[in-house]
Image (tube, rainbow, N blue to C red; front, side, top):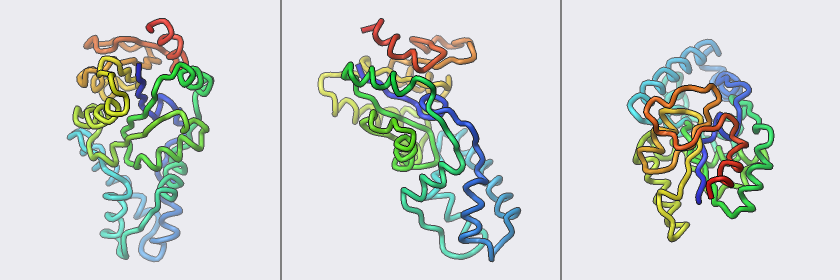
Amino acid sequence: MILVFDLFETLVEDLTMDFNLGLKPLWEAHYKDKCTFDEIKAYGEELFLHMLDLHKQGMEFPFVKDELPMYAARFGGEPVKMSTEEEAEFLMRCNRVRVYDGLDDMLSKLEKMNIPMYVLSNSGFTAGALRILLDSQGIGHYFRKVWSSADFGKVKPSGEFFDMAIDEILEQNPGSTRRDILFAGDTYLSDVTGAYNAGLTAVWINRKDEPDIKGYAAYQIKDVTKLADLIGAVV
């Protein structure tokens, strides 16, 4: 058995999500002499709507590669360059997260069961930045690899995004097939539907007791930390 996890609201809970907490230090460092904060904030809101439109088309809007140059084009100056560490710092300013209670113990149990674990996330931030976020929460070491839609350019439920990760997983785990891969996520469309269509076993973290309208979820749990118990009963 192989496990692939969604990231946000599956492994970590978003306590606050406020893009402006990252944008303000960026403005102070690079744009304070070019525009007011209200102006750059308003433009950031425009770009957020642009991101939502792209997501509806199945495309991602990578923050460093695509969004940062647009601030320079609008307000002047050279595009801001960010290292992976700086990108992660920006991300963690915007998204204050915490690991769900009991998650570390569950991941430790799964690791002792020799179950390979991975993360496949929709995010405008790169896999390197997401890895730093996971490390900051003390759980990054459990995952063999992290993939982000920011690097691939398409978002879940894109079959191409799933296939890219699956091909690498199966290459790393000879003798395994798609039927051996469980995908755990909290969002029905991107996680459950995407995993089902990719030929994986979908585990829905269904905290609100929503109906499985298409019957795509092989398993449903309210608490991600119950996943080890579920797997123990299955294998």
